[in-house]
Amino acid sequence: MQSRKAQPDERGESMTIPMDWPHVEGGVVLRSSNVEVIVVPHEGGRIASLRSIQSGLEFLTPARVDRTPVKPGLKNTFQSGPCAGAEECLQTVGPCEDRFGGLVPDHGDFWQLPWQLDSCDGQQLHMHALGFSRPFRFDRSLRVEGASLYLDYRVTNIGLHPLSFLYSAQPN
Image 1 (spheres, rainbow, N blue to C red):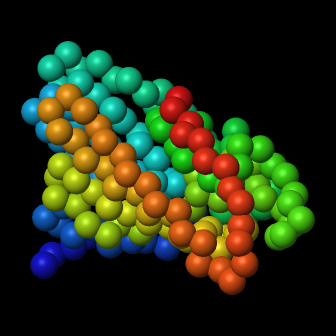
Image 2: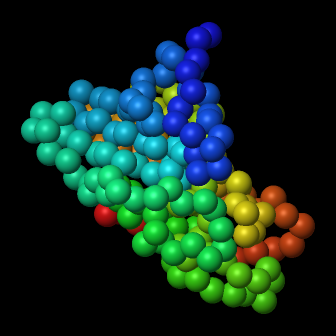
């Protein structure tokens, strides 16, 4: 199977996207007869575009072109990231400290992490990321069918102790 390197993530590392996966520069494309979705794994796995194929209408705010890539860290603010498309907020929606593990960054870990692509067939995509402030694995599957986008999530505590979290989708 041939593959190509995607754009480097914030740490300068590139992920490999197989050539037979539908993609655009830096992103993966899902397409049905009615809708096109672009997912950008190296920018927090965010959905960068959700567009009607029939009308051309874009439903999400595009990212600023003059932004600086974010390096994952506890003191990052969500506003320093793309603030565009649809992003994931997990373990929290604001910076905080808890009694179990200390600091949690603004809007959690996952909006600022590169995500690993597990599979894609042009209409369905599976990806995951591992948290850095807490031992969570976050899996997400996206599927387009007709005029709909379906998202399925799984959050797994891969640590030794029980942890609480808050999840919020952040469409922009």
